[in-house]
Image 1 (cartoon, rainbow, N blue to C red):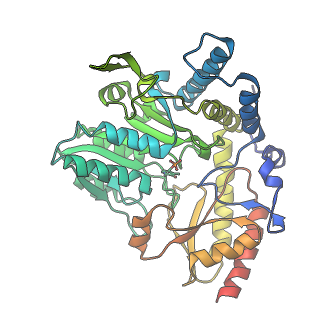
Image 2 (image 1 turned 120 degrees about the vertical axis):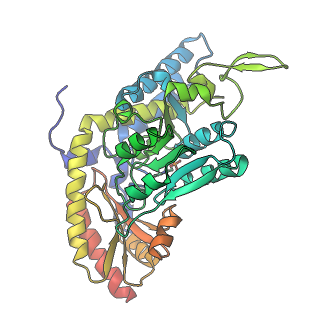
Image 3 (image 1 turned 90 degrees about the vertical axis):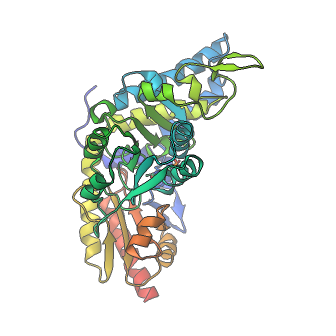
Length: 409
Ligand SMILES: *Cc1c(COP(=O)(O)O)cnc(C)c1O
């Protein structure tokens, strides 16, 4: 199949039913894509089709429906394996989301870490990549060290190097910051951490919507994301782990499907990936996530990335013309996210007013309080663009922003 070399935005927008709706009497302008992406009709249809045609539990029935469901579910795993270039399909574990994936790994290290071991995270992390490690440290006596950011919001690599030593066991960094959109130099981080035999987990929730990720090339130990940010439904996450680490850590949940033998004395665990997929999973969601991935790949991540960069550059240029508007996160390596404030106006007030014009933004701490503390602000307004957004929408947003500012100052 020949891939499009250009994005046909008009056609693409037709694929998303929600883009037809009105909000407060205006056409919806959805600029909250970093929180969750909208869902194309093919994905919605696949969920309807699952429940209409082959709803059934997987891996356990010999009957036709169960086999169809199992095949579709496992086929989805293979799609993600290929997409991320993992060696084996069993290195792709389906979870309920990024948060679940991170907790699964953190839980897995409870018995492995010792008091005095060190974990490095960054100041740019989402709360879901901070709290599980704090919980792990409370239980094990390990310590957290934090890679600082500079005034642009970029990680200070030389400070990271200073934190590494023989006690460093784990390094956890996001690929792209959800609050600032900055792309972190993860290959450099992974390689340097490996020189100290540290295990690296990358939170890819903000990267996978915008760029191709090759786990083999990265040589990353764990890579996690949520499919609701890549055109899939909510409630499905991906955990990629190298086989050796997935074999080393214990399961998070006990129950059906994750066992080999069960007696009252002792149960033995199933092999990968079942060991980590106890109970009935989100079958329709996993299948639909595979359809969402296919949809995104049919447009092409390179095309998406190029188009979104145009939107980012256009919006950045227009917004910087506004007096007293400050953008947080300045870097050449950025995804289509703009986090900003205008003078002393509270982000929430601007967010509420632009919502009256049908424009969805995110306001507040963005699940990243340490970043807000660094900049000494209560929060920001964040607009984040996807490949179905347009320059016309950005123009309408700028207009609404001007109105909000004149009402509030
Ligand atoms: C969205 C996001 C998460 C949390 O994802 P969930 O789907 O809510 O579990 C974690 N990290 C980053 C960087 C995110 O953008």
